[in-house]
Length: 434
Image (tube, rainbow, N blue to C red; front, side):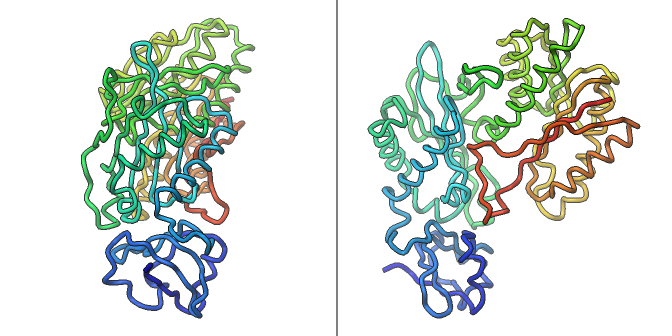
């Protein structure tokens, strides 16, 4: 029998609008005593059905909805969750993703607690698929406690339904429960775990295949799918890179130089600069890429990736907020400022915004006249207006005329819901330096 929780009178408005969260102080009675992650039916104060999902009495977000349909009797079952994943997969296919992409984006794909990336990989002439999952809530931890069985079933159904050509023998599964957000749910932070490996593939140094930004092909990116940051790669910038790269292609046609210099700040494995290199090399330009990151391992991957596409690479191992003053002013044609989230909690907003100002101040200083700066933020707690203000301050500090000529955001594999504004986090502007 599923546990039933009721809301206080008047606390049902947000849920009725489709928002998937209920906070503990909105419940009519204390939820204590229920094992974290247990299936829960949510009702209003009068006992009318609102949603089904799972609960956690130890979390501020006490309930998360998996369905608002009363006919869905077992929303934490494998069959139900598989169908949710396939619905998400259809969205990605419809959007034209041919290689790797984010398959499930938590609440925005109606599967709260599950972040699931799908990687098409290649090594030694062979291709295969890898699922890399983060289970960030007690409810999803409980629902997928037999993760191998869940992903084996998903793989078999995906092949049968034409979503994927790969069998279970051609599939790897990595669980990345090494994220601090699990602590908010009262869970432990665990080391990365490969629950299904691929003989003949080295997941710690493998090539993933992605849509190329400048053409209809795919591009290879070497990375570590076992212990690399996040799930091994940052997939969320694919749309923004596509927009920016095609802008840069049009701009490049008007240039009288044969060499274009690109500065990639917080480059990680060099996705931005590798895609830019591919696009500009196809137009006959020589591309000099300067990679900046604090991680020696990430820089090694980034160098490998950019050089594969034909770039001449220089590596700068440094903290971007401390070391950029040593780079020459107005030296680069294109500067990418795509840092990790400077703001992790509300208390970090003032210092985080100051960091965005500082980084973009350097970016504008380092970029030539008639060049471009791409300014990005993945801090969900930083409102877009505040991010724009940080960019404004940075431009003024350089006495620079800046025109924002492109605005980006979420790609189709990182969808957003109008009823769930918390899912909006990614911001990107490309500025033309006059």
